[in-house]
Image (cartoon, rainbow over all chains, first blue to last red; front, side):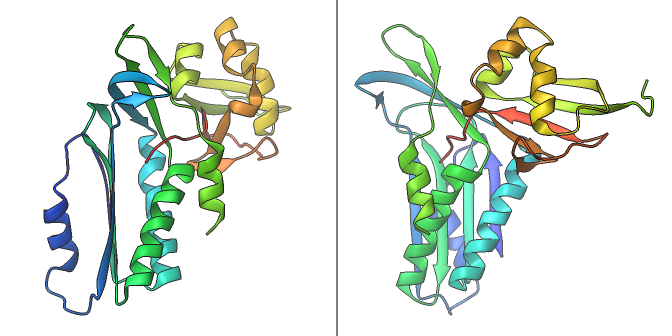
Length: 151
Length: 91
């Protein structure tokens, strides 16, 4: 069963690992991806990143992506937690965990989950630049579509 | 409000589309001839200079109808929730 959460608060990676495997011993490997806020973009320093989302669509979209990963790699469980609101450089943005009997499925499912989340889940990032205080919406990258397409 | 000749829709805007239209959410009654997402964009563009600016470059606008990704050919029905937003940038 997938755990899906969208929240302003930070997450505790260790606690999420423990929750994913609690009470079971059939897991052979857990893939983990944590996305964090960089302090620069295109050579400019940024002081904050603000994440907006479409609440009525976000959880169903994440649940669909997680269900697809669970089906394709016969996962024993997965966790997707995405933060929203104003985040500072170094802070966590997103957590993906995928538990499987064997490592390849865990690693591949983790890659699939983050690549699909980046192209199919309704989140938008806005960066605040240090020098001017100016804000700009992050543009989608074609490389992200290519990364999702390889699955 | 609604007559058989119109359909009532809930429209949502996110990120820079919200900033340009200056509304996060609005309810609109469109003529029955506005039957697809593409026709709706044409109709909404006429609402204000801000709406016009939001939809000026349609290649950069994405849409969802009732929380499912949609395209210009997707049909719309009365009561639908139609959201417009830029390509997603989460993760």
